[in-house]
Picture 1 (cartoon, one colour):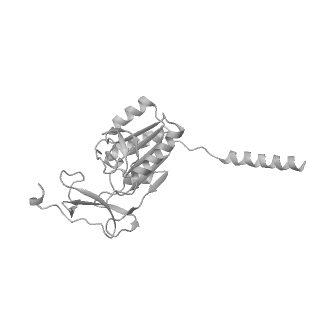
Picture 2 (cartoon, one colour):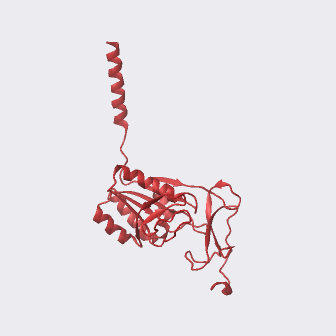
Picture 3 (cartoon, helix red, strand yellow):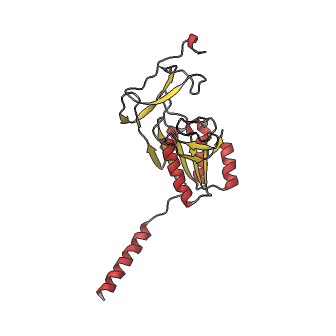
Length: 230
C-alpha cells in the first residue's frame, strides 16, 4: 500500500512538472554577434543544426551573396555554404536582398529562417523583413558583426540586438595583447590601420583581425589622395 502511494505521488509530480514545460515559442528572434574570429559562424551553424534535427525540411539557411571568402582552414564552396575557420560548414542559399530570400521562404514554407552576414543587408529592408517574419510566427536566427571597423553599429545589427528575444555575444582573442575579451574588428590596409572615412567594402589589400578596445586603431579623417589608388 505504501509502495503504491509513493508511486502515485511520483507520477503526479512528473505530470505537474510536464504541465509547466512550455514549448519553444514561435516568432522568436536570436541574434549572434561578435567581431571577426569570435566563433560566430560556428555558433550560427550549431544553432541552425539544432533546429534541423527537429525539423530538417523546415529550416532555411541564408547568407549575403557578397561573402565569397574561401577560408584557409575550410575550402567549402562559399556560394553554397556558411563555413567556419574550425572546419565546420552548413549548406545555405546566397542572396543579395530580402526579396530574394522571402520568395524562397514562401516557396518552401520554412518555419525557421537563419541568416548569416546580416550586416551586409540593407538596414531598413532587413528590419522590415525580420519583423514581418516574426508576425508570421516564424523563428529567426541572425548572425553578423555588431560593429564595423570604425567601432560603430554595423547595418541593422544594433536594431536587431534591441529587438531580439535572445542575444549570443561572443568574445575573441585580441590579436595584439592576446586577451580573451570583447573585441572590435580591426581593419588594416597594406599593414596599416584603416582611415575612418575608408568605405566599408574596399577593393585592394585589406585584412581583418580581432582587437580589444585598448588595441583597436582607426586613423581619423580620410585617406590621402596619393594612397587611394594603392
